[in-house]
Image 1 (cartoon, helix red, strand yellow):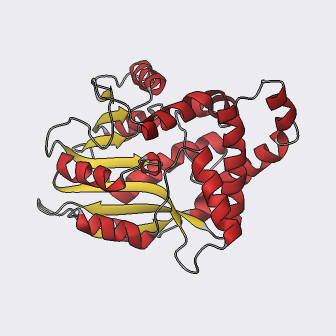
Image 2: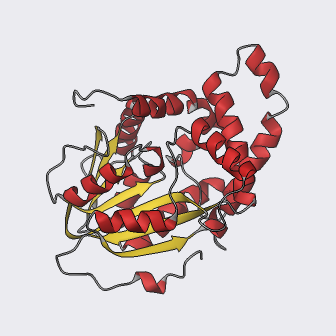
Length: 304
């Protein structure tokens, strides 16, 4: 990571993705879609892999990606979003990630897709990218900031790297604000966060406050919970399939601690979603300055 020391929180994230590599590849079909995130379902979605790819398309429509954009994919995973953004819009993308095998996989995938000249993948911390000030017009963070311990540090870095008028997009799980979580839901949240290497989740108002404190303006929040619900249903089916054999596999040391914790965390996540404890949201914000683009986001109904 450019010579940087990996702290304990970052090492937990790396260990999580290394430990669940088989799970994502074979159960979530991550390498088929180049995606580790939830899918976006609408009337035109055909299947799970299609939903994973459509998430990129829908988020790009919310952000208003164009060929002139220089996108920083913060936490780029296997590179699927970076590749599709270049292929569809002709923009340039810098992918940043702390997990070594994902950096290698994303680099190889971009080359295989024929977009290696427009996609630059680097191993670095998304709170300290080392990129020049004002070097990007869009920062794209799809289910990645949830793994960051110091979210204010990420927002400061995003503000620094964005050009004046640049846009920030964070797709994330937000905790219900009111009424507060009861004891059962709070326990599920802790299990979920621990098993998925997430230091903690924010509420919408906490995000709005932190964004304002970091200098961002024009904050908008879109709830996509309805559109990711089928992904949660798929995850629930996988949990019901795997749960009966998990104790025996762990006893035989076929199932390691990280994937076992991942299974428990996923079950807790599904329960908490069904109880209304969290929503799947897209948070948009803009760095002041520049020439504000015509606002097309209002034409995209949230959650559709």
